[in-house]
Length: 106
Image (cartoon, rainbow, N blue to C red; front, side):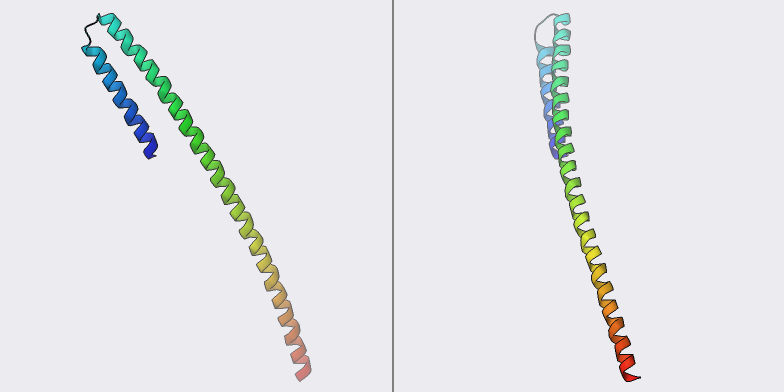
């Protein structure tokens, strides 16, 4: 988010400087207003481009994070399934051993 704020701050500073420069230039009012509008349009295009790049970057990061998370979940689910099988196997062996011991001592 720091990058986004920095970009917005830089664009705002550039826009303010350009507007101040135009306002203090000795030109006709209608020409000055047109220049302000043109510069505003130019900055709007740049801002939109920066926002689109940032959105694309964030989207890509989100997709990578989601993929990584899904892989981790799958890996842990497989471990859990194997653990359950191991526990079941140990329980069956224990049951068999206990039954054999009971039969042996009866």
